[in-house]
Every structure is written in C-alpha cells, then in structure tokens.
Image (cartoon, rainbow over all chains, first blue to last red):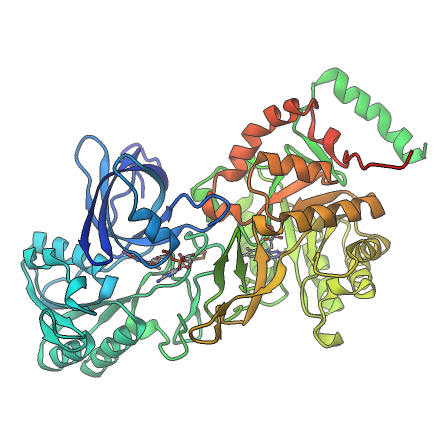
Length: 271
Length: 327
Ligand SMILES: Cc1cc2nc3c(=O)[nH]c(=O)nc-3n(C[C@H](O)[C@H](O)[C@H](O)COP(=O)(O)OP(=O)(O)OC[C@H]3O[C@@H](n4cnc5c(N)ncnc54)[C@H](O)[C@@H]3O)c2cc1C
Ligand SMILES: Cc1cc2nc3c(=O)[nH]c(=O)nc-3n(C[C@H](O)[C@H](O)[C@H](O)COP(=O)(O)O)c2cc1C
Ligand code: FES
C-alpha cells in the first residue's frame, strides 16, 4: 500500500473518462485515467465511485475492477464494466469522454489466484466483471482454467470472452447463445467431474451458494465475491456487514468482497 | 452579571491581547476546539479507518461511534438504503464495547492531535452510569456524548430520549459517575424536543447534541418486503436538515446550553445556518460517505464564509437568528 517514497498512495482520486463502449444490451465498459497515484488493483477489488449525485444521491457506488493498466510513466488507467440498473449506473453509462468522476480505491480484498492446477471460474450476469479480470491475469501467468459464464439472454453476452485463453463455456437462460440452462448447474457438473485446484464464483447469491455447496461436497476450495450495499467502503460504518457462518460479522468492504465460501452463511443472507 | 461571567472576563481579554487566538476556535462547554467542525458519531467510526483518507488532526474533534458495555453484533443485513437526499440506516449499534474502546481505540488516537468525544449508549439507566464511570478519566477522552436514542429495556423499549423523565435520569447518572463535560444527544422525533432538552439540563448535562436520525421505512413493492433487514431505520442526510435546524433553535432558545448541531450538513453554508440557529459546534455525518474529506473542505472554507457574513469567529454567529418580533 505504499509507494517508493514510503507514502501511502492516495485512495481518493479524480478520474477522467477516456472512453466508453457499450458492449451488450445493458452493459458498458468505461476506461478512466486516474489523476495522481493509485495502488495497483487486483481482481476482485473495487472502486467506490462518486457518480456525481450531489445532495440528491449521497452514496458512492461500489464497482469491481475489470482491468487495469499502470504504465511505467504517466497516468494509470482503470477499466470498469458497468451494468445499468439504477440512477448511478445509468449516469455513468451516459458519460462522455472527458467527464470526471471521483474514485476511492482500490478497496477490499480480492481473489487469491490459484497456485498451480486447473481452476474453475463461474460468473452469473455482471459477476463477469471481476472474473474476466482474474482470467486475463491468469492468461498472463499461463494458468489453466475453465470459465463458465451465464447470461440471461444472448443480448447480454460479452463477445470479448472469446479473446481469453482458457476454456470458455457460455450458458443462457433461453439458449440464444451457448448452452441453454443456468450456469450453476453447469458448474456443479464440472466440479463433480473435474479435478480443480480452486473455484472462483461471482454472481447472484443463489448461484454462488450452489457452487459453494458443490465445492464443499468435493473438498475444493471456493472463493466467492459477495455484494452488499455500502456507505463508507472503508470498514467503519458497518453498513455492508453480513452474518458469517460462525456467527461473526463479515465486513464486505474490507474483509471482502471476496470470501472463502465456507465463511459465508448462505441461508439467511438477504440481499 | 453573575460571578461566573465576571471571573471569565479577564481571561478572555488576555487572550485577545497576547496571542491572537485562532479565529476558528470555539469553547464548547469548557472544551477548547481548534474549530467548530466535528465528525459525527457512527459516520467516522473509531477514527483509524478514516485516517487513511484524511488527517484527523485538522478537525475540531471526532465523536466516536457509540459504545455499549458489551460489544454488539447489530442488525441483520441489509442495513442501509439510499433515499432522496438521504439514507436510511439500521446498523443497530454494532460496536466493540467500552473495554475495547479504552484498550484499543483510545491508544490508537493518541498522537493524532484530535479532540475525542466518546459516545455511550445503554439499555438501562444503570448501564449509562457504568459506562460514564468507565470513561471518566480514560486517557484521551475530552468529553462524552450520551446517545439516548436507544430502547429503554426496563420501560418496554420506549427510547430514553422520547421521555423527559428517562432523559433526566440518564443525564443525572452520567453526571454522578463522571467529571467530564457531556452532551445529551437528542432525537427530534418527539412532540416537544425542548422539553426533553430541559430535562437533560436539569439532570446536569453540559450541553446538547442534536439531532439523531429520524425513524423511517422504505418498501420494495415488488416483493412486499422492507428494504432493511431490521424493517425500519434512521433517516439522515440533507433531507433532515430543516428538522435539525428547528430542533436546535427550539433547544437553544429553551435551555441556552451549548449545542453540537448535526443533521444533513453538506457544505460550509449549511454550517453557517446551524451556527445561526444556535449551535456552538457542528457535526458532519452522512456526507462523509460521499466525500471523506468534506469536513476538511468545510474547515478551509469557513473563514471566508464567516467574513462574507461580516463576522470573524464562529461564536459570533451562534444563536444569532433574528426572529421577527412584534414592536
Ligand atoms: C464489491 C462490489 C462490486 C461490484 N462490481 C460491479 C461491477 O463491476 N459492475 C456492475 O455493474 N456492478 C457492480 N456491483 C453492483 C453495483 O454496485 C450496483 O449495481 C450499483 O451500486 C447500483 O447503483 P445504481 O445507482 O445504479 O442503482 P440504485 O438502485 O439506484 O442504487 C441505490 C443504492 O443501492 C445500492 N445498490 C444497488 N444495487 C446494488 C448491488 N447489486 N450491490 C451493492 N449495492 C447496490 C447502490 O450502491 C445505492 O447505494 C458491485 C457491487 C459490489 C458490492
Ligand atoms: C451509518 C450511521 C451510523 C450512525 N451511528 C450513530 C451512533 O452510533 N450513535 C449516534 O449517536 N448517532 C449515530 N448516527 C447518527 C449521526 O451521528 C447523525 O446524528 C445523523 O446521521 C444526522 O446527521 P447527518 O444527516 O449529517 O448524517 C449514525 C448515522 C449513520 C448514517
Ligand atoms: S461500507 Fe462501511 S463498513 Fe463496509
């Protein structure tokens, strides 16, 4: 967390949108140039984004890192993948290049990459955003993985998936792209048959729970990225807290968002 | 002119003569603050986490997250919901307990140069008394804030702050058990907040802090579920600002006690309004989530804002509301 001078890199920065691209029906990729220093984010970490809500919308929006370039010289670039669901994401996905937003981050504890063996990545919907980043990083390391990506329908499919080097399987609810069916069922089959060293899941809670169950049954370690509404993003307001399996509170913004699936209490987690 | 005032006067003159006091400094019930901008309880945690994004030493003080005798786990998730110009929270007083506060938090703040107000909350009058005794003389604590927006377990769960007698009882027991200045933090969700404020004063409160959040409910019509795991929560943010200003004015007029004003402050202009309505200091709450540096920006902007209003110090604005009167 410190730079070469021993200073803590600033968590708060202004960032300028350099490009925005609509990649599917509801989802945009936004590239921001960060003014000042930022710690290099890892897959699973997030930025807490001030979408410019002023008094009307007080809270920042947590958005996972989808990619990062930190050149030797010059400004760092952070890539976010944003699905339009409400006011803040709508606003971000309507910004034109040159627009500024406030970023705080990178925050949280991301995925711990597998050390060797074959990994399984399972995404549902926008849960793709951090797992795609993880997969790109694994490509750089030459790691082996299967990536199962689920979407509601073909219009949500993210074409850049085919650029990844791993084995990609796509599922849609209506079968318009890839296999018809839900990704968790595919994942459970894979976990039963495969010999994975680690499993990574991000998506709707029911999907992650199914994957976590299968992993527990097969004795495979499984990391899941939880979501929770956040206020401070820094661990002090206790807004994002969810109950863990041992009854202890899990602070999603600082201890997570990525957790060992065995630490999560699935039933009773309300979202 | 009473004796107390006469005794204070020479001091006051000496300050003007020799050292040109910091124009932003205020005297809050005997506690000297370098400026009137405090961080509100619950929106700044225990200080350590926020210090990764801001220099705590520059604010007038921090009011720590309320602690109870034993640590508490708080309410089920989800705990927050954004609302127009505000948010609902139902954190439910999740906290580390007073012992951990004393053993871990206070030492960690030592050396940060920040004035610390500890906030206490209890289930019973006696718990407030024990908490006050525990914090009396705790190193680094300059004053207490007494959060009375908690269910009174012995009285069927009605909030202490909703009843004058319960509020007086809490203030009295805190007064008996500690020598520190203390501020009773009131809720404005009562029919007559000034009556509660008078009760706090008669119990021995050094000052008041107001307002706490306003109870609210948010609904998801598609699932018929409440948006919060605890069903209801407390509303904060700019949406409650006019309610806060009125409560402050009512309590200032009724009691003359020093007031920490809070509720929806967003920028320096809001701070000036809170001073005019009767606050001696103010606490910055929910806006910290949008901009952790907002308190610092406000402090930087305050001298200009004061001079634009024709005053040099925050104290000159306190309670300066000019109400129309019949001739
Ligand atoms: C760690 C983490 C990483 C995330 N990464 C991504 C990502 O890479 N891409 C992406 O598109 N989305 C991501 N999300 C979800 C994203 O935060 C929400 O979609 C977004 O906050 C919605 O804001 P809004 O203003 O559009 O919606 P509104 O419904 O108007 O938001 C209202 C409030 O609810 C909160 N909220 C609403 N939905 C969610 C949610 N699913 N999770 C948490 N808070 C929510 C908002 O932050 C805001 O405080 C992530 C969430 C978390 C917790
Ligand atoms: C997440 C959150 C937690 C809070 N926790 C406490 C608390 O522990 N004790 C307390 O006295 N007030 C607590 N408050 C209330 C604030 O201190 C403040 O009175 C209120 O939010 C109104 O101010 P604001 O609109 O500026 O936020 C909390 C508020 C929020 C939003
Ligand atoms: S969002 Fe404040 S503690 Fe996690």
